[in-house]
Length: 84
Image (cartoon, rainbow, N blue to C red; front, side, top):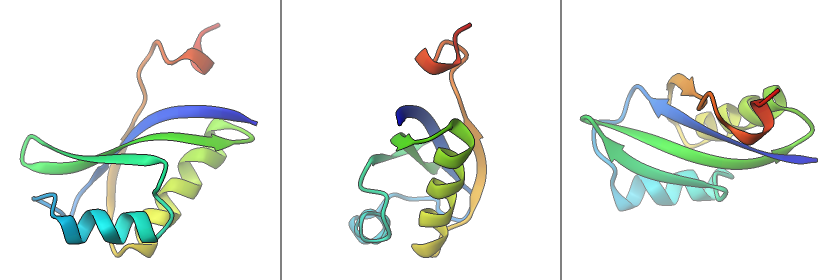
């Protein structure tokens, strides 16, 4: 397994609260770091999975368990496992 780095932006949360962070952690996002940015909430993940797609899908599923909705997923072009 590899560890994949990506950021998930939430569409339904304008403010990062302790309650939201606790819900995300309890839902399985313990490998993510929630933060507030540009009037919204995002989560930077370092997720271990067989491949990038599995990592992203599992993160989105965990976020949904916390009652949140994903707007988009961002991946840095120079992410280690994306380099040729």
